[in-house]
Image (tube, rainbow, N blue to C red):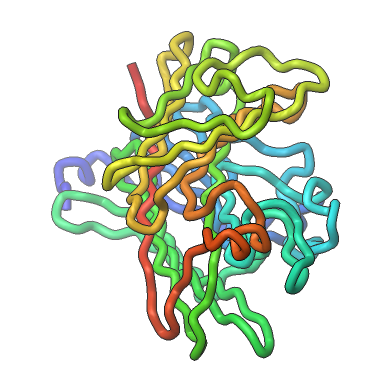
Length: 326
């Protein structure tokens, strides 16, 4: 451990730590949260009751994340009916989507809500820990999230979220396991959402050199340059693919001299969607590593564009969200 540093402190919580708490009041009543902070100025919130997703993220007091007007919403309010997604989606820094569906709502072969169910499942065996390993001080959360159905699937995400004392990045390691006797089709997307003031008219977006970009609707003509919010504007969608072993997307705000990156292993996440929504009050830029193609489960099965986890086996994903600074 760093004894020279420790001699300057009464308690290391002065500069880095994790606070476990509960929300009081509002739509997030009684939700458990774990608030991480460190000496670099990084602060973020892990929400075990919402699939161990990330809600707030700030750096040196500047907000990086998008929160929907719904705000943090209890998983008890989850409703799989068609049209209910926009009534309850909280947004936040990272929302895990899947494992049954990632695209729009479909009722072919069952009820598969928009972006799936996993992000509303509370984690089991959630815990946080801080510890020294050599001269490095680690802050970590662990837990497991199960998506199950009688006579059908049993998939688990075992998640570890880590940062360090002076780090400007968050590492998410997921092990996804199929506990059933049958192979299981699955869809997985990490919906990573940036908001004001990092997102503003000066901001630009870039992806890994060599990656291919495909617009997904008529309005999608410029994946790079952001703009001021526009009343009533509809969303733009872009599909990025053909990365190397590692994919990356970046947002940079020259006026702030700040940016962020999303880096991911492409072994099981070969693609990244970009959601550019410049609509007033729903002003968000999302970079979304995924194993999907911007279609719903029913369409993915028809086209043979769906990943499968063999019975009693696992796959692993590595995601890194980091701060860029001039």
